[in-house]
Length: 235
Ligand code: UTP
Image 1 (cartoon, rainbow, N blue to C red):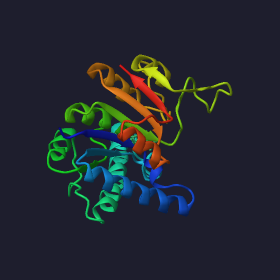
Image 2: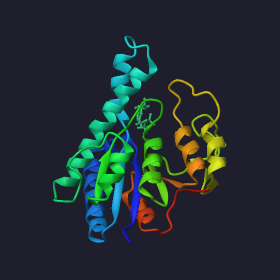
Image 3: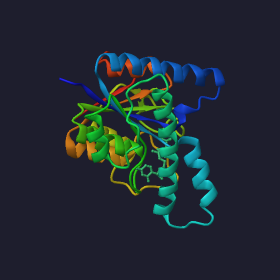
Image 4: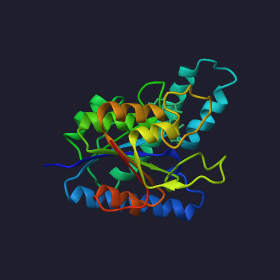
């Protein structure tokens, strides 16, 4: 049976500070994708907005009061980043869907035809983490892999708590508590996983994992079902 994986690729991963890091990251991603294609593995990649999203939202914020309108700007940035990943993977001839699907139903159906489907955001009110969870559910993936720019989920926010510790194993409910599920969302608050994504994963009994996507080796280990350093989130 064809294996299908869904990866949320944090937008910051496309822009490592060092140019040499950037060259290596894109090259490693291409090599991994080529190996996955050889095995017939299907991968849905949901790309975050990173720097362009932040810049564009900051630019518009003084003139645009509606939060959903600002979300639309963020979504446009995620689709820009998705197009970068899509074209970088297409260049060496990998079987990547030729369009950036605008919703998860379309993305799931494209995964029936292509080894790789790359997309960004869908509708306002959540981030690409939640899109990845929705796509994992619709594509029948066993879990949703969140590739971000931290090594683990921490038991509390490490930016404000010196005694925060990395956690290797959590349940979805514990992850929800750490990410503020059920609490009002604070403007500009950045959490390791979007609480909407955790909520949808709980509803669908979908396992997740969080790993440092700056290392393509870690992403490869998760995709091949090997042990990896990061946080496994069970149902
Ligand atoms: P991201 O998914 O990049 O959100 O979408 P993020 O968690 O803030 O950023 P990273 O992962 O650290 O890079 C960027 C913004 O686009 C809008 C939201 O405003 C989000 O904050 N967005 C994205 C949506 O409204 N809907 C979507 O489906 C995706």
